Amino acid sequence: MSVSEFISVEGLTRSNPKSHRQMRFAEEERPFAVQIFGGQPERMGMAAEMAEEVGADILDVNCGCPAPKVVKNGGGSGLLKDLPRLETILKEIKKSISIPLTLKLRTGFTDSTINCVEAAKMAEQCGVEHIQLHGRTKEQGYKGLANWDLVRQIKEAVKIPVSGNGDVTSIENALRRFEETGCDGILIGRGAMQNPWIFRQIQDVTQGRAPYQPSLEEKQAVLLEFFELLSEDMPEMPALGKMKQLAGQFTKGLVGGAQFRQTLYHSHSAREILDNIGVYFETLTTHDTFGNGLTEIEADSDLEFNSCDVSINNSCETAVAA
Ligand SMILES: Cc1cc2nc3c(=O)[nH]c(=O)nc-3n(C[C@H](O)[C@H](O)[C@H](O)COP(=O)(O)O)c2cc1C
Image 1: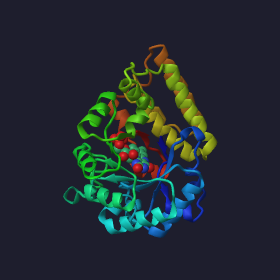
Image 2: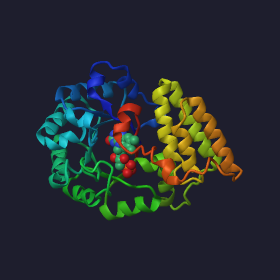
Image 3: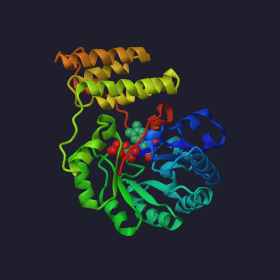
Image 4: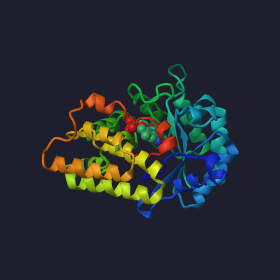
């Protein structure tokens, strides 16, 4: 299944074209969940209804984004500071839709206020049908490691399905998390940006096959197709941001990837990025050296796209393996 990037209910209910664009999806993306964020119960209810109207299969509430702009208005992980408000929101949404309602949580606002188990139990009582936990607090942002023991604790505390999330970047790691926590699904974010084939590879292994290995040509083709779709879908500037974001993650671990990412950072047009991708993959195919000798660290320091803060400006998405 796939999930939209998180969409502002303020934007949606005030007819902001960007928010409406973010709800669009292709048939092959089904089952498709629309994720909304906000702090006002009535607006959350209205936005949920709009998502159902455009054909979403699932409505997901974001209770995890740590971005100050989101938290300040009571949305995202800000809701973890006010569980009664979250409860009101979930009940309001349940009244407005007939598609399943799911909830994406962080573990708590701070280390000393971990309340995800309590939040999950309350959500189950409100009729939420699936819980996803990113095992970090709001305060942690993307630092430190995700706490998967809390995934296990939620799984033991509720009857509805529970998925875990945080730091899964390999098949082995995913399988270990399933086993350790008994969770029903795993969400993969940054790992899927680096390796969009990871879901298929996990499925291959669980079904006894060798994991699929894409060729260099396929990797390049996928990157280019993604960029093409972006260019059709949005103005050049936001498309450029997304291209940099994906290409930066996608080439992590590839030979010369750090140098390539540095050229991305300095690219000012989609054409320039596309040209650089062509040159980069050509050098990979011919085993030449790409770039000007920058070290990995220098080259990467400017390109750490690891927060949903970025997504407010450039927009990004979360992939889910169930
Ligand atoms: C660039 C970026 C954008 C994100 N946008 C969203 C979002 O819109 N909604 C959401 O629930 N989580 C979002 N996340 C958080 C991820 O879904 C996930 O919870 C987090 O990255 C931890 O998982 P990972 O270690 O697999 O990346 C975003 C993460 C990143 C890095």
